[in-house]
Length: 438
Ligand code: IVH
Image 1 (tube, rainbow, N blue to C red):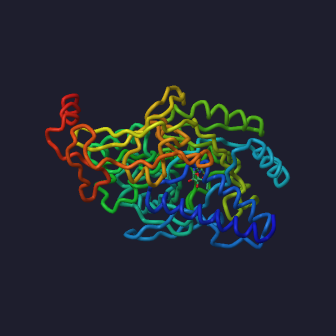
Image 2: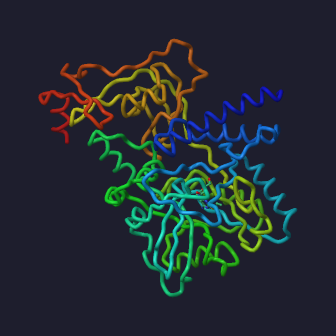
Image 3: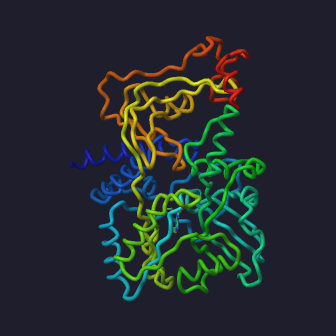
């Protein structure tokens, strides 16, 4: 590859990543699957390594994505909240292990679930929760204290055994069950449904009105030390135990490993358990247990050298959108549904999947005849993850929502502030049937 080819490919990748970040973090509407996103990130990192002239401070792979939002006070993170280097390949964990082995002499590992949520910092002063903040851009985050105070499992006050000044970090999440219930509520009210529990969690924490947050089923796992109060722990497992003793919510699963083979089998063990947790996990985090080694190992621009994330392949299946039909619900809402060529995924056969509304179809550019990847949102609801654009033949058809109700032929309207179209005929037989069923 020539310099100029590398430069134009890097620009292309940056634009793709920036747009995906904006859709995800600012609009809370993901438009690409995790797999594509990770691939772009990886390709850009490799390009920047191979062509160092491409490196720049503002490259989306050099800074922490996460966006800041108007309407919130800002909180400075000291030290900055970093990300983690990710891998999908066990071979890279073996390389990670030999790198650590060359840098330090005696060490062991811990393996934890990688909670798929929103990272968070909690600060206690005089053992009282004073500040909760998002990661934001890593250095500065949004102050979401009022919202976090609505999460029941986060202690407002710590016991006397805790240090008086403490900062801890972790991940807020929405339970799968809570996510399904919330989406059912959103749909019944004609509001936009969330793509997955992580997005629902992010959207819930960024509410300007804490009353809205309090109606959302959120919880937290605390897994990391912040800037103060954690120096007394010489290893990670003891620290997590300490957090739990102070009443902080911690991980339901953690495993020690003495060598890389034990790490690899713990990762497999965790993968088999991934659907048993109340929250979604998208991988395992492998950490050095001895905290005294963290300063020696240091960090890169992307994350600490003492930890790695291993991402599990999302369970997904390829199929074809044979048709898009329109369902009329109890309240008259018209919902487009993808009629799929039947395919088996994670325990069940899938032949239909809601496409939510016309905006969503346009955003994902789903056409009749498209080959698509199907995933299960919240591990339960089948959803179209992305279109396999390379498989288009040109015979695919763009779908348009009908201008009349497909059941009664009545007028349809889009109310202000809603994403859905509604059939406005109160005598519509589809609505009457659904109401009767209800
Ligand atoms: S430790 C310096 N442990 O994954 C960051 N992170 O993709 C140390 N995450 O930014 C983080 N589960 O938001 C750690 N058990 C876990 C985690 C975890 C989820 C998140 C975290 C991090 C992101 C990286």
